[in-house]
Image (cartoon, rainbow over all chains, first blue to last red; front, side):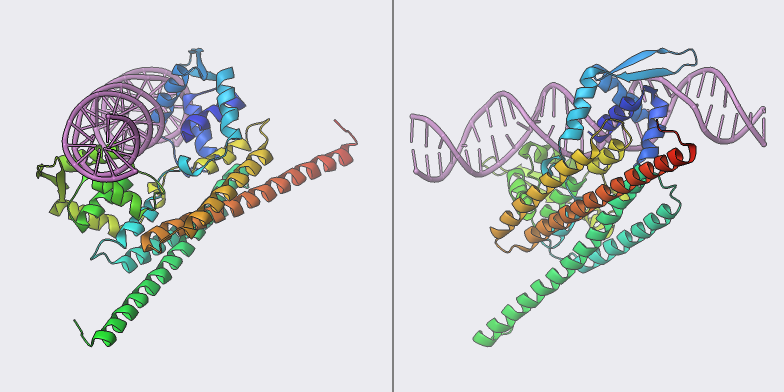
Length: 187
Length: 187
DNA sequence: CGACACATGTAACACGTTACATGATTTG
DNA sequence: CAAATCATGTAACGTGTTACATGTGTCG
């Protein structure tokens, strides 16, 4: 629903046409999640179908301006007024991947973690480079910071996973050794 | 693609039928992102269509066991072997929301931030409570920790946003005051 | 003139979600 | 017996993605 509401928010600033919406969206989010133009038009069509926007006439140059309606404004308000909760959030692919990796025999979990951390570190560096070229735009810097915080926590989580794994392995070995000692049997 | 690969990973452990897959998936991810049973069957159908799994015969009790194929194993290996990168990640709804909130006039950004922080703190508490009931299962605890790290970084980001906003407001006022002082005009 | 930016749109498809329909088996 | 759990599936829908088709204007 981010795109839907994103476009609605932009139209709350002022009426715009599709192409412009893409430009503005990419700009305010720092081109972090580039938006396909086609998507804008399909989303606008759906917004219009739901009565949240109205399309104006073509303006002679082939441009069609969209305007937010009262219903759209209400929808937007409720978006801004309602926090994002767990059930809204998409499944975390990385978390699922690692959670399953540790349960599937024969998977080199440590390798998975290492590769992921390397990739995340690179992403973080790209981010830093990107931030250096920043023009001080507030919304843009907020988005970049959001990603920095996320990457940071991801790296720390990966470290945590590594030590959890190590501990689990140690405990397992410990248990095995204990059994061996108790039974005098070594498989 | 998390479900697709998730099911594939479970089938790598051993052949299973749909209902069982849901149970296992929910269990390993700690019921964090509960999986609709229907989804399992549609996903299995797609996996079979793509040759990543094969469906066995019904076993008399109306159960149909699915098995991973070599192609499926290859796909799974590449999933585990390839890190999750930025372009894989879904758009961050919260980041988009705040980025837009600061650009739309008349939005109470501070209020949005406060509500979100409150909600995230509650989510974090739920998480802590949930963790207390944990049975020490490794994959489950990894997922829960992942969420804890994320919530934590989200709260810190929200704090950061607040101070950025405050600073931006201060700078703006400062500039206005400077202009007033220079021109002697107060609008 | 050719390439590129501007501008709109459609079609096909993948994935995920919910709700519904159906039936067997178990258990209080 | 009624309710819950086990078990499979389908239909309809929403969103997002890519690729394609089309046309205008501008600038080197």
